Amino acid sequence: MRAIALAGPTASGKSAAALAIAQAHEAEIISVDSALVYRGMDIGTAKPSAAERQAVPHHLIDIREPSHAYSAAEFAADARQLIAQINARGRLALLVGGTMLYFKALFEGLDAMPPADANLRAQLEAQAAQLGWPAMHAQLAQVDPATAQRLAPQDSQRIQRALEVFRLTGRALSSFHGTRAGVTEFDQVPLFSLEPTERSWLHARIAQRFDAMLQAGFLGEVKALRARGDLHADMPSMRCVGYRQAWDMLEACDAAPAGTPEPLAQLREQGIAATRQLAKRQLTWLRSMQRRKVIACDAPDALDRLLDQVRCAP
Image (tube, one colour):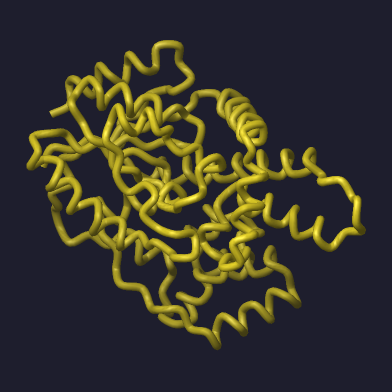
């Protein structure tokens, strides 16, 4: 297997680094990103441009409608197949992204988790309506501290799923994520991680990127998604960072008196805060992946260091 993995938090420079690696090593990029799979979600996901995708082949982008979910298990199966096809063409497979559960699923495998239980979900939603999601998060911390640590207290969808799994199986959700079946073929795949030494550097880039998205028409993109009529706020696609905040803002505007201006400053503040929280969760995941080789993405020569390490990788 000829493959290299490149991970890192959002806005750490993965996309530009991946293009440089791919062009230097005749590689094809496999996206490891749970948001890039959705069609029509281009601006808010910082999807690679048409020119970038023409310069280097990209895979697992625009493969789902936002109305259809895509699981970590599906990603692992698709990525395995793509790696084999890319290698058969005599090229290197470059796995790039920030969805750490996808990396875990591919590298370590996942136990089969129970399907959703509508009755139990209704009970959890009713309890959350009474107590609030921070209180539900506190309940989760009692039975599954590892999962609770990486979830925000308002992350209702993931808190609900984690509590649902525990009540159905008596097992913590985190116990399903680290089950290994001995040595796998991915143990020899190098994993490089772009991580900042100064969190302020990453925060500044997050703000700059969110501002650029707003200027590029992100809000119009979300308005178009809402106008489809087949999407709602609790779908995995619409819970992606930025999209959820924009959706909530537009719903509030619908309920406001006619002529009320859109609170773009509030959307910007909430979107940047949510993206920072995502980056924090991603870094927490990465620290648990001891196999990774860290490159300081805020160093002036970060790209040169990364290319040198990739060049020396087995």
